[in-house]
Amino acid sequence: MNSPNPFDVIKADVLNVIEESPQIKTFQLKLEKPLKFETGQFVELSVPGIGEAPFTPSSSHYQDPFEMDVSIMNAGFVTGKVHKVKAGDILGIRGPYGKGYPLDKFKGKDVLLLGGGVGLAPLRCLLLTLIHDIDDYKSITVCFGARSPEDMIYKNFFLEWDKIDKIHLMTCVDKIPDGEKWDGKVGVVPILLDDIKIDPKNAVSIVCGPPIMMKFGTFALVDKGFKDENIYLSMEKKMYCGFGQCRHCVIGEYYACKDGPVFSYDMIKGAEKIWE
Image (tube, rainbow, N blue to C red):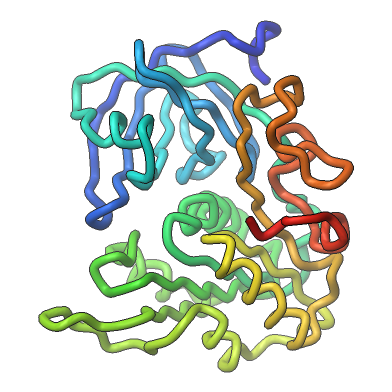
């Protein structure tokens, strides 16, 4: 946390709202005070007078600390109110909380990002951070999926990312509704692993998305030969307070908010209901 008071809220001006998909928007924020975070950490974003909820920034942790992008899916009361926010409105942010991705353990290795839906938001933050220091990594394989072409977020960046020598980008959608166009693969996200060209023995993978996708994506990675300790999961539970006091985000012996939200699979694979 940047402040000694964990409940201190920083005023955040909404500069722009980008409609990424029918259910997901990216809010570009200008903060009243700098807020430094590590990729993988989360913040509590609040709508004044309404409530707050945890989100992982989708912008790089190298970005100006007075600026932050947060991509949010309209999935409940608070997120519904956030989706009504427009440029010029005011939000609040406190944090950051939790532990980020262990980037030092990724250096010199093939890195694979496996994500779907709004789970691409933390992975975009990670990808932008990896690109900033791309010489530190052997390669970066990006496997992104969505329910349909119109649900795929960040697609305007795909061409730019795919031009980077060390990046191999693969995408898929679950289905193609009538009237939508898609030239890529069709199927659930783990099918993209059939085409990866990296050696799992010297690779790490990072998984984020809906619980069902994370479950079967993780199982597929294990089947491919990835070691449990080299599979990192972004676990987003009910992280109400953000620092282990409300105890709503217990995963086995851990709190998702302060011990995570990033866990290696070997840390939590024995805990109950990790995919719920």
